[in-house]
Image (tube, rainbow, N blue to C red):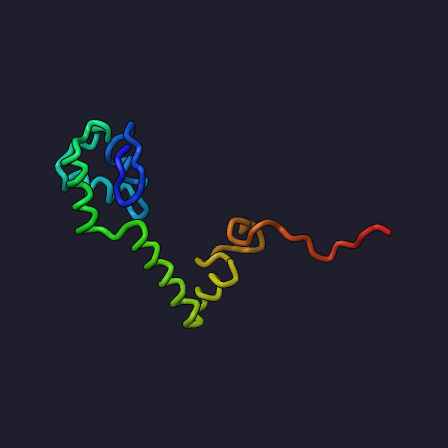
Length: 123
């Protein structure tokens, strides 16, 4: 298993699919990286040489913000929203949907498990 940006990349998958395991690399960026490196997108990661993997590492380091650095930037942006008192920041703080979704139903992922309120116990 090759290791890129601190992530174990699956060797049995295509190069562009394997690169998506890195936080911050999606389908479009993965194809861009493969084109910049000059590989066949259908090649498997296990077929790449160490020099080719090093070329991918260099491209990632020079052109993309990924993994820990990207997570830090996202966290700082959310903290800035919370500190400024913006509406989106208050939604983040309360653990509610941020982008205008309804909350009367279908917000369980953000709100967590349902908490029953006001149930009377039998005596």
